[in-house]
Length: 142
Figure (cartoon, rainbow, N blue to C red):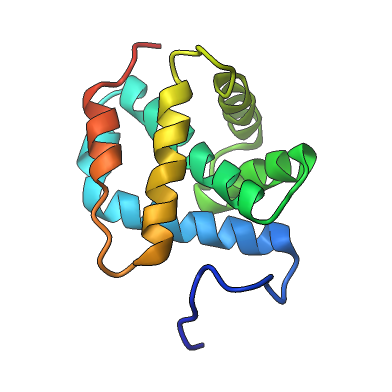
């Protein structure tokens, strides 16, 4: 299948499935570059997961998804994209939802993830994860 502009129109598959696939591609790009940094500690792993939730929120914003749709995309991504167990996926999704609260110590990671996702969307092949590396270096403690 030919590569298309990631910002064009609605997908031909259900928007939730398309969103899970898109976040998975973004996550794979990050993992390919930053795997060692991501898996350095549990705190950094949480930063990475909240960072990815920023991408999910970004897609939700772009596609005008409802909060339950965004939640469903987050869960499906954790289950299918990252292949995490059901209970862990539910716990992480709720943690990320809680982290969207203004003033939450993990909130900045979500916003940085959304911004990094938008940068990746414009140029997936030339992408360098500068925001993720910065956020990982300043990971808050769980």
